[in-house]
View 1 (cartoon, rainbow, N blue to C red):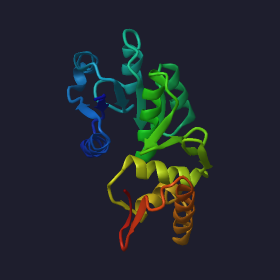
View 2 (cartoon, rainbow, N blue to C red):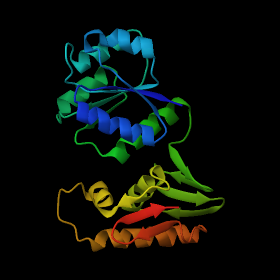
View 3 (cartoon, one colour):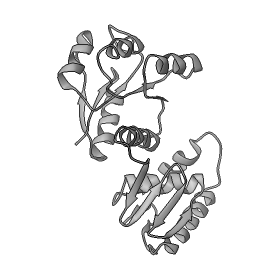
View 4 (cartoon, rainbow, N blue to C red):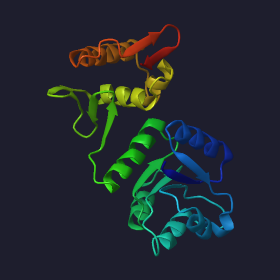
Length: 220
């Protein structure tokens, strides 16, 4: 089981991240001794770190810079800052990725998964039963049969796969697709779900996505 360390001084965000990661099968370590952050990292020796820029005692970017002197542990910067200069600086210090708050849980999980796959030399993909989901190519295959998903269809399917056998609300999916930045007719989600179902049916999975009336969907 991969161990992910959260370095974040906001307790609410820590709890949210912990729930997301544990529900996705990861072991979670939360750093609480910010005064000796570097030593705490060395003690735990996590497989990946989620690092906020604004932490007590030491700037997250400086901590990353010091960590890189002795370690190649993958680091994803998770921050409320949203400037290109911060992203460039973090990457120059050795961050493997950079995601801003409020973060999309599915995007965060996909980026974590991509880093682990890249480290292990695998293609960035997910699996669901006999289906292979290639996120980069936007394809889903079952043996020699392949369908091409649109960006929104892939986001929906990836989210459902990451929450396999769990209830997913329509609001969650609406936020995933459009991030509440603009009004979207609720029917747009229904259309995307319908198209995704049709494509999964072509691959032999006719009833994979079940509708729970008044709530949302569940991938069986």
